[in-house]
Figure 1 (cartoon, rainbow, N blue to C red):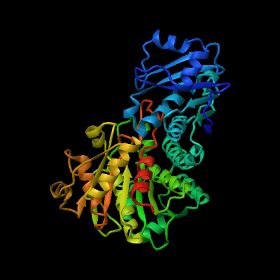
Figure 2 (figure 1 turned 90 degrees about the vertical axis):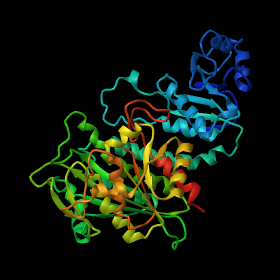
Figure 3 (figure 1 turned 135 degrees about the vertical axis):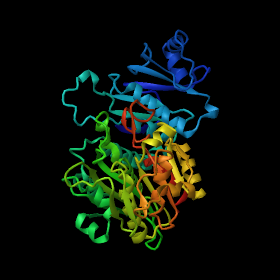
Figure 4 (figure 1 turned 120 degrees about the vertical axis):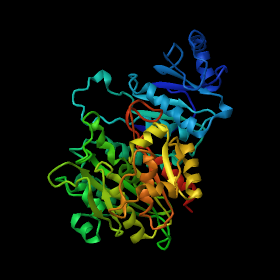
Length: 486
């Protein structure tokens, strides 16, 4: 989708979008257009249930007197209470309503509202993953190619550049999460990551031989049942002084998760192509930071494995030795993401000595039971990180909810056979998984984000259609921008 900005005026073609305040008469250019059309827009509003309430929309063929071909009236609610996120979602609503309308251009009239936010929302909502649709009827394909935001803000176009860079990162994450397991596996994922070198990101990829030398027995055990070689990909963006301590993001990249020998039920297993969602978010975030030239040094590390059953797969009851030297009894091979992150986190803190580490993972089904699909769960001992993420989540719509950590939960993964076991029992599954990860942080400030319920959506959302959401890229980019730049 192409996003442009123009002077504040009515368009001569395409669709025009007017944002209408709740229970108010049309004003500004909307009133001017209505007058030219002999009050036809007011009549359409009165003859329907459209009141301008947030979320409402009314689309009409443009009446005589209006040069555009169609008019979309979009409810803005009470403008005195509108947040920036509300405006972003208005832009998304406009795009969603007009994507398949037949118009190839839409002009959003941004009177009294943030034009950049409207453009951002329209761009985010325009994404669709149709790479493998070879016989889609023309009538179902989107027609909208360009959104123009008409505004009095002469600096809107320049200000939008940073938002577009972040949206590009979101789109990369959505692409990765949407790819099927037969095309996105550890080796091809690593190749996609290497393409980021064109963005100014330093990329390094470790294979199984290098990881074995480092003692990454925990990560390697997960992928040993697959024919695809496991990888560890490291991305570095150096946007600040070379001596500045970096911040770090670590992602779980299980490109397909059968559960291994502890095989998952067949129904719904196809969705396990997105069990690499944490890694997808880290990769998208690194692209976003580089794209907008963020003034920060950042490291992104993703462990890429495929969890498959075979004659060489790890077994329940196996004991593996992690890079940290700690041993783990694997009681369930479907609790594999934490095994991948254990070595990735230890490698991260050991090599880069970061200010903090944030890991992201589609780690537990228990997280969905706890929070559904509205919030991701965050686990941290740092109030500063928790508060920063909560604010960034509220600002971007990538919502988070803080969950507890406590020594009594940690005891649940103690084990008589090894230093720990990889599951803690039926209760508090998400918490014991986080406690497991904490044992590999070596006291570096750390936060775990369980995105199991937010990486994919079975319904259309304000800023994405059904499918990969790109959750976490805008959240973490905002967190970095607000707290760790300059």
